[in-house]
Length: 287
Length: 273
Image 1 (cartoon, rainbow over the protein chains, first blue to last red):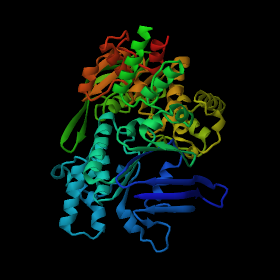
Image 2 (image 1 turned 60 degrees about the horizontal axis):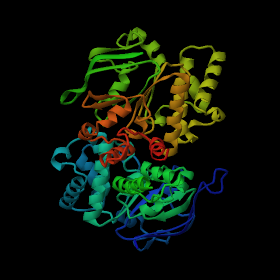
Image 3 (image 1 turned 135 degrees about the horizontal axis):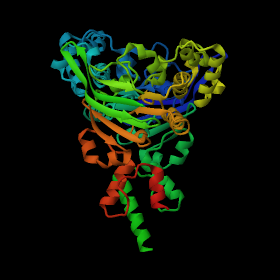
Image 4 (image 1 turned 90 degrees about the vertical axis):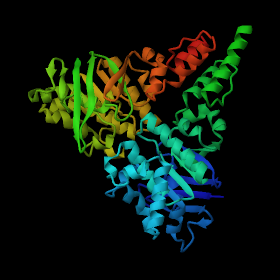
């Protein structure tokens, strides 16, 4: 088991008038090599939750065990944990700071005390994983890159640490459709090739549905629902009620079902919708 | 209302001049709702900054109600009539209280205090934020912040709102709030809207869609007409809305479904009349 969260509660500013319960008794397990989509609207607690996965936040109560290490135990070396768990924040390109792309990506591995040769090997591999050409970008300032390229360079910086768990908070926010599709493609390949555990935080179910094994829906600091994308999508009406956007095809199916058409509620893809409607429309004609 | 005539624009990069806009022609009518779509680097944001003279064309001209944006004398007048809202609401809010923030623009126009108060109140009512008038902007949600930013522009009483990816940084709820607010301003108050977005489901709500690619206008027309041209859009790596795609697949299969259905609601009333 990669991550085991038991009865995790987190309160911001405890003991003050501003005390806010961000996580309320959350229990959750994430298996090695699993791809999980963490969905919820702003304030649902999803970012707070993932910041516990590498020890950036400490539980107010409850435990978090990552790759066998209990993060709350006395004397735990959080550096070891942060090496295993890479966290890519929202808009990670805001954290680029070095003079060249190569130096920026190398910053983490260099701090691990690796040899120059090993650092360069990792930088090359990390840039290749996000399809940035090492020779073309290594000496360029990260700030000369396009928005999408900057995002990829920032992600490469985390990949170069060779984490066992990679967490990305809204990785496609603000990207155009082309860059969005490309980035999701890189993540899928990174998962396939490196076999790492991947956790994608998003408020768009549609975006993660095609690539995750499991969706965990957060609401008001608790796990509201979890299951395969298909199981979660079939609960579209509930999800809308907690402020989440349901993909248009799911919404169409729900609306048509509500009007008495016999359609499945768990349609994920365009082809499935097409097939379901065909079956239904033919039936209608026969009657 | 706004005319863009043969506009080209290039900016200086280290390697030399880079063309951001090439020979763009566009005319925005009063009360229009125009969505501009295209990838990053397609020139949409450069074009947005042309509408109120934040950028001046290298060639050609942009006029707002007959006044050219290249004329520095008209700068204030033009910015008062064409308001620009950006992607990140955090960069647009300056004051410590919502109503002070909204008052910032009219104060700079030298409007008497009594009138400012009236304008601020009205602008906050227009974006449905009157009950948050004494709140601190930084404690609001993303959607609320963006609505306050819009109120700040509305208090200048502009004829036209230009919004450059106003929902890109918002969650679904915030997106819906901002979209509904702007749609209402357009439909009920006749404010001209230019809406720049990556979201096709937002573009379908416009009266007209302009597709930008490499600094040029690649396609233009009502959403129905533009989204019928799926293959051309695909060549630009742009998708048609998924519901339109479904309608086209069902039409391919021989069902009596028009190929230009845009929204879930439309599809529902077609299939379940």
